[in-house]
Amino acid sequence: MIATDLRRGVEQLGDMIAAANVIVPFTGAGISTESGIPDFRSPGGLWSRNRPIPYDEFVASQDARDESWRRRFNMEPTFAAARPGRGHRALAALYKAGKIPAVITQNIDNLHQSSGFAADHVVELHGNTTYARCIGCDKHHDLIWAKQRFDRTGKAPSCDDCGGPVKTATISFGQAMPEDAMRRASELAQNCDLFLVVGSSLVVWPAAGMPLLAKNCGARLVIVNNEPTEQDDAADLVIRYDIGETLGPFVGN
Ligand SMILES: [Zn+2]
Image (tube, rainbow, N blue to C red; front, side, top):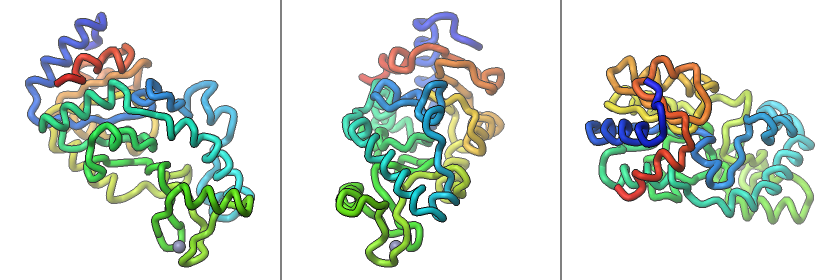
């Protein structure tokens, strides 16, 4: 069912939230645009101007690593200034109220953690761009450390321990999906009674398989997204309005 107007959509969503015992949200870029984080995939978005650097290229080429870090530091003012929006805060309120055990996200911006979710309760399918890891030994590195290295040498940083390339803790194109996060996401999808997609156009697989997995296991499915998705037909409720406007009424829960 597609909500015919925003007010009715909010009412219907409110009824479904009230009736649910375990809500699992699945979030994508749309929830963070209100926070000033651009949707990389959108037409005119960053990726239509800057071709993403695939994982194997990052590993093989110093130039690719330098370019990758140059781009990341260019984005730092945007990421550093971003604060949770109404969508993040509404989910955080439901989390605090005990209705949401954890959030599954395709986002890399750390805004669910900033809104009040414990890091353990944010299942990141595409990693996190607010810190870095060594590709060789998996050592955690701060971005400040990486920036100091980059500014001093003009080169992408290498690990102090093993000399391996250091990369933001995101999942690049061509990089294996994080097994643990995928397993946890599947478990969450199979053990909820309301699966709430927020701001994802559900085009990136295998992540986009989660809503149907939840639905097949008996959950009700709600999709809140500006644009139609290929899974709207499977949803119990589709709300095609602004995410902040739709979830704003739930911030005070
Ligand atoms: Zn290392």
